Length: 384
Ligand code: BJ8
Image 1: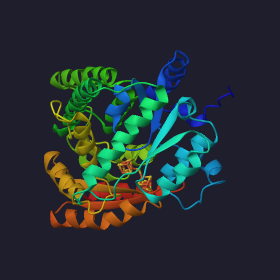
Image 2: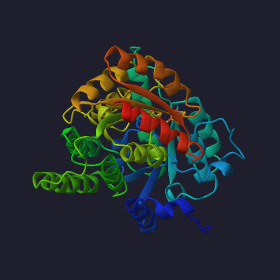
Image 3: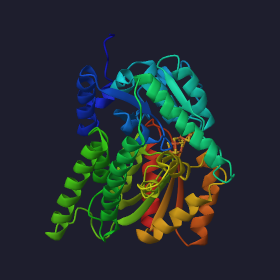
């Protein structure tokens, strides 16, 4: 086995993530099954039912991007370049240790990147329909989910039974309910946590390995935050402007954008991306006759800009603005993400129609625009 070099940026990454890196080595060396994935459309219950731990491999750091650009075009989304760069440079323990990777045909950049990623690590690509609107889309996706199940069965020479799938559904539903409770804390006025704390709680859960452990870690943090709030602690001042952050996945810019919002008198009360409340609230019928179909149906319902039409996202964001008493919407677009970039026109219109202040922020993983972002965010929050 080659020597693994950890990137410098991990030194100051959240402790939970670092703990996960150490844990993964031990887990794999003890015979644990590990797979990597990139997208909210990946049906996690299939992996759970096969006792495969699945970890998100979306790159969140600028560090491997110069190396990735030796292969990939520069004008590509930073999330794609970072993800590929980690595999290309052997710098991510999860990519390094996983048995295989599951990709999906979402945006053009990602689906073509998977072809190159497959040269480094075995990569299985789910063929996701481009729309939920066609009658046949549900059947196409069901067949894809079934093919994934068969691929995993063959890979490990196992059978994934309906009982195991049902058990996995129960555990994932329980985890989702717990995650919804965590989001609910931000509905209080003032919110019970800073957004950075919500995110580190989610990250801690994510690297806790397995839905039950994740749930335990969320439940403990929720109880702690509620008790502190009841005892009079207010981690966020009542004057903080309540922000809904929507658009592209934000993990790679959360320091540049999230911390800047909080430093300038704002607080993110709703993270409205594909792994936020709108997706988490989609549960699966635990008693469905055809449990595999119930799983595939749930995942196809997810709203993402790669789908057309994608009206559900606008409707959901509007509902979240009301629920979380939002003062302003920040629409995050990662550079060269055409789907979210074009869709921002509709998001802006939805906000204007409902009298909600809106700001679009286009950025990448570098720090070259930090000053400009600070100025723009400060001005936006000041105006709320
Ligand atoms: S369900 S948001 S994880 S596709 S990689 S689309 S930022 S250009 S990540 Fe995504 Fe699944 Fe949708 Fe969620 Fe744009 Fe970049 Fe593509 Fe991206």
